[in-house]
Amino acid sequence: MGLQNPTAIFQMMNLWNRFKENHPKFPKFMGAVYQNGLKEGSIVEINVTTADGQSLNSNLRISASDMELIAQLKELVMKP
Figure (cartoon, rainbow, N blue to C red):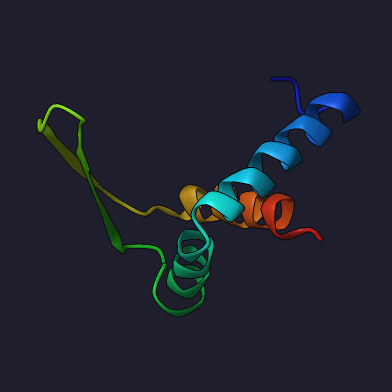
């Protein structure tokens, strides 16, 4: 999806708004994480349990360049 295309941006924002409606606690959680704890050197752990019960997990240490990306995504997502 080319985000330089206004139509693609509009479609992405519609998908994000639907996601927020479906999962209202998740954006609030991510906002709290970003405001209170997500700093360079932080470790993010992700666990996914598939519909058939398989558990997949990973972790990553946040770098300075990750923080730049997160800031840009936050600006895109948090626009009214």
